[in-house]
Image (cartoon, rainbow, N blue to C red; front, side, top):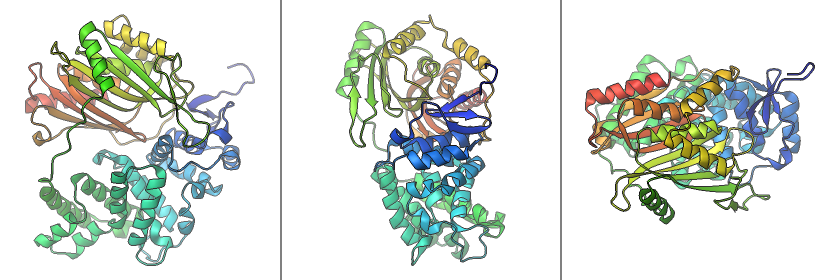
Length: 512
């Protein structure tokens, strides 16, 4: 840095760190970027920073309201902010002081600084909601949908600003809020169930006979799936811990745990998950091309930012630039099966500073000439512009033929980068799912804090362990990665129990 110059480190698109605070980049245009307040807040919280007072004032003065429904990025940035835990509290308070929280969530005004009726509560209603989200952030490894847990934690008492039962009022409010945030109907219903019944587990566990079948039935009637049950379990604990020491104890925890275990056993006989959708015509075309040529077939589709909300523009797949919309870049790759494919492709994306928001891998045999792996990715630039399509294609081909050492390049870049302050996060969870999860493969579940190159490290560990990834489902929900890998041995069979445990340990070690 030149003498007298101020050092500024990029944190996210339009956001940099300066003098220990998150501030706007010189090229940021708040008036044209309604997601910027949430992006700045999330970046600050995840890096253990505050947002400068001048920045918050400028965002409040210049940013337009978010379109309805929210863009995907807005929803994910809110979840990322909530997932920062304690580090998010001063950031949230800064936004609230300038009216940005109420602009995002108009119903927040009714609970803002609202006193509690029950003396067991330590905080006002609004601070209790934030504290519950903080507690929930430490439980994100326990659930398959951390985004729903965090949003439910933030909104579970939102009905306290209205007459009547706050759980019933909250259900009505959260249905409206979830739709405005852009959640789909199933997720909206899950959030409504969580808010309506956030007291049901603790009330039933402490007031009913645990051996009476009607006690378990009272839970399974309202929480009809295992994923919702695990979400309600975590929300119940987070709510109680955020209330105060009188609201949670080892005795209460044991009663709730026992009730959840019995309800889970009853729900375990529910319907199987729906089968994966058939590949599209474009995906079939790519798979056939890869099978016939013996090399990779690649398609890029970019969704460029629209000048007005609701107007969508798509760039041509062959365009030199992939586009500018952070949440809208899709990459589909078909390639004949080869060792290390998942980790290699993920590493190339990490080299280009593309964060993987979701991904899937499946095996096809379109012409009977041998398996072709089809990888579908949704990626976003960490900051700055997205890479040129031609350069990304070239690096993918070089990595797949071995002329580009992705692991070495990533290691060199990481060694040269300055150490960035971060926040404490729950340790990664790597577990082998019960055998009933799949009859034809061993399912390895990975839940971890998202970081550049995370999927690359997982892929390399699986390759080093000598297992095949038959299919994979990868999701990044806010700052949390929730991934499932269907593994087989070289003969295409599920792994033996001991072997599966060794693979899980290897992946755990790779994630540090």
